[in-house]
Image (tube, rainbow, N blue to C red; front, top):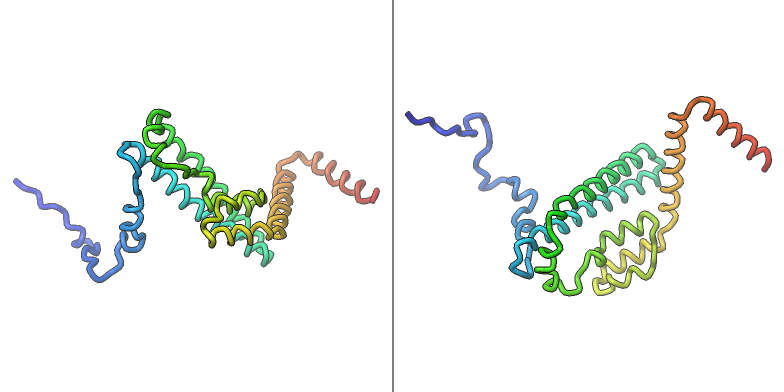
Amino acid sequence: MTTKAYDPSTGGAKMDFKDLMSYGDYLRLDSILNAQAAQSCAHDELLFIIQHQTSELWMKLILHELNAARKALKQNDTATMFKMLARVSRIFEQLNNQWDVLRTMTPADYTAFRDALGPSSGFQSYQYRMIEYVLGNRNPNMTKPHAHVPQWHKLLQVELVSLVFTMKLYAMSLLHWMGMIKMYLPHNWVLRIQLFQKSKNAGN
């Protein structure tokens, strides 16, 4: 006795995408899945490449959210700003956790293909540098590794002198978290803080 294989189309599922956008079309999977160009025959090099490519994709999203947070701040929309910053925080958690996969690679596994990578290094990540700049760590010397790509170098230079919104972002975040701390402090400690602030203002 044979059992007929289930046909999802009988339940209304679309099965023919000849003239329609498919999942792979939308995500451009052909480009993404063919972007891993190993420089050696080492088995673990693919893990190394995918680890860093996915990190770059997450960093792209971080910059997208940080730019949105800045725009919200400019419009005094602090609720949206904190939503974007909360998302950035979760992305950083994701980036940190995904290194657990790379830890399955031993030093010997890494050295099997490291020489094939030449002088390339994560130190040269443009997006990593931009995140540093946006968040306030603005060492002008760190634009030098990107001078060979003019468009990236120019964007970093622009960000380097754009300090106002970074400082305001820090100030708003600090005020927010101070408010959250007060919410969870015992009432007598909140009163002490208020009295201290009043006495300080009176002294001025």
